[in-house]
Image 1 (cartoon, rainbow, N blue to C red):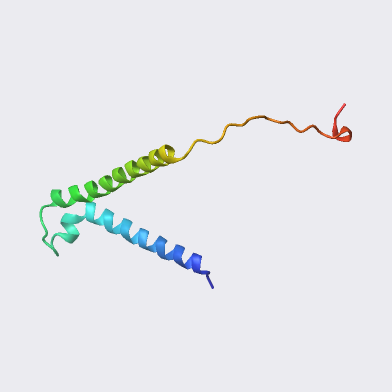
Image 2: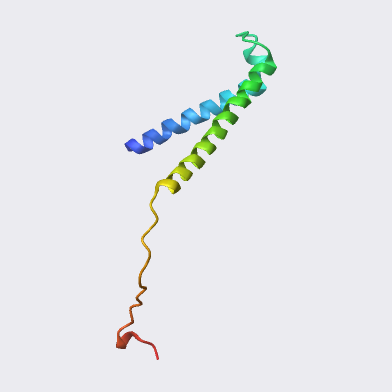
Length: 97
């Protein structure tokens, strides 16, 4: 029996594999497989959007992460300065000669 986390992991894995296969089939096999069944437009238009949408999502995600890091750095107060740095000395019996 698998735990809840393992079950969720398998579902995520299977969904990702199905999406990957569907993406590759649609990108490279559109003319032979999909277009005869569903005529939604030209091959180049569909293939353009199959590339453009993930690139747009990745670009926006990277910029959003950068904006979040900048916002965090700008709104976090600086740490208090360290007044003194004290070094603890080892007890007499632990000191090496």
